[in-house]
Image (cartoon, rainbow, N blue to C red; front, top):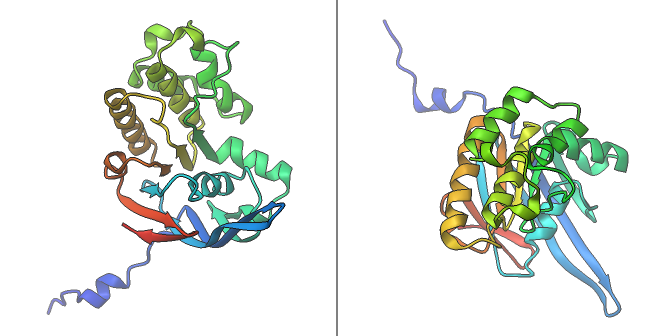
Length: 237
């Protein structure tokens, strides 16, 4: 006699551990008037291949949260675990290694190296991490529509082209986590939408987790989950 699984049986299946876990994250900044709390106990998880939009008013702490998750700053307290490594316990040297090898970051300001060509900018982080893959860079170049621009320098590119290079550079290392801080903030709406479509396609191709801070409800709606940072804590949207 066959036995059909009950919902309880199905729910008992083990879930994959999240690639990113943030627990009780707190951060404040010192001023002459005293400490100003920015994050008051932030908790969330993000699985490999999943995307999460972080929204909130200007000054709500979105960039602060991304800097902490990206191992660019120290939290006052709390835990950040990326790919099984507790980032909040690492030395600065170890955090630099995590940034090179496991985290790709795309900023509102493109932050390309002016003296390097498009091709050299694309491979910069991957070479630093010792993970340069010529075939993957060629695929990124074509998928981002940069094949005809490889010999150009950043000053010879439009804003949308520069942001495509920045996305390619971040993904060339095949990171576990892609962070984007207002990645289309310097672009017009149509160009920003195209750049976001490319980013989402490449995130799907690599299977990395994607955390994006944005003030745009339209762009946030394109990601799988949305949360709002308000008064230093997260609330689901």
